Amino acid sequence: MKKIYSVRAILVGLLFISSIANSQTPSQVTSGVCDGVVANFNFNDNGANSPSIYGSIFDSSFYYHAGRGYWTDYLPPYRTTSPGFPRVMNIISAPYPNPNPNGTFNVGFHYIVPNPAVDRFQVRVISVTQGPTGTVTNVVATSGVQFFAAWPPAPTPYIDGVTSPVPDPTPFLNGFEGNVCLRLIDPDIASGPSTTFRVELTYLINEGSFAVFDNLSIGPQTLSLPVDFIGLVAQRNNSNGVDLRWDVSDEVNVREYQVERSASGTNFTTVGTAVAKGKSIYSFSNVDVPSTTLFYRIKSMDYDGKYKYSGIVKISGNNSFSNQLQLYPVPATNEVTAQHRRVMSNSRIMITGSAGQIIRTIIPVPGASHTPIDIAGLPAGVYFVRMDDGKGDIQSAKLIKN
Image 1: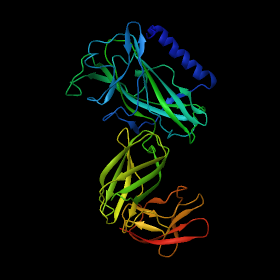
Image 2 (image 1 turned 135 degrees about the horizontal axis):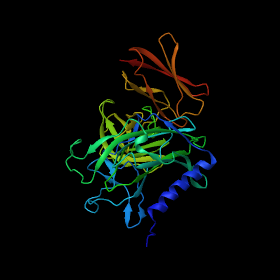
Image 3 (image 1 turned 45 degrees about the horizontal axis):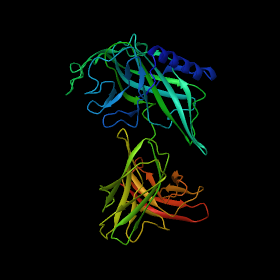
Image 4 (image 1 turned 90 degrees about the horizontal axis):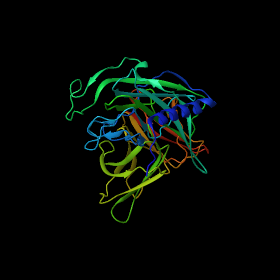
């Protein structure tokens, strides 16, 4: 049987937890920058979850409402009448790398609450570090309990199905809506290659109307995408197919990988998918493949609809491996892939002009055999790409930019 706790005890516990987090290094709270949404919840729950909190005779929790594209405590057919109050609800985000400087973390979200002058919230930032002995979590910053109305701009009245027409109006969803954007400043917020961060948001609601959480942001628009592609290789098998393998690092918030194929190197179609499982190496077999020259690339899809492409590999014989530097597509407009032998940490790729001047230097990912190169900012013309493996072997190939 689940333990039953009073709401008063829960509120006291929240404040106590906040004081513990602040007792080591008090967090400063200021206005933040929150124009880069990492989870809009329009298509799925983005890996967030909301544990139930039992207070008095009712269960308080957010639920993902797929039809409305946000989190709310309205859950038909089980929860359609006026909710109990006062109540506390938590939501915990998926882990994200911190796109902000060390010691800072921005948190923004959209809300609908009955009375923002009375209703409150608390934000906690939780570090998640993968170590040799397991995963270590730690509360590194907290906002303390805040009133919704204390954060500009001022909340505006919300009446469901009137101010925002929807196909399925929610009874007992009314009050005010607005946005919160704050920055937590705390030296305990320390990023690292094995550390990500979860956002835990707590609502403290004091009326018998439903509430909404939506549009999580953790920083500016220049948020990094949630995976780095290291390499992609393709090899024909004995069953008239092609086996692909790709290596990734920093996989955070990725839902799936889509395998795309092209006969020209420019127009791609999806031929299969692989579910993201937090691994560093993935594989996929494309069956019934023509024996002509083919191009492949991988598209990572994260939970909020953002995506990122790997480099492109070309397979014209039995495999996509090459000891010689090759570029494709040529000519190219925005991006070209350099196919090369696997490189070490001291390798580099240089783009030079026709007179030999170095225009750009790219450091390949160690272990990579394919390196995508952004050329969108280069004027149209003829260039040369030079590959230095760091051991005295330098290869070059002509690049034509449209």
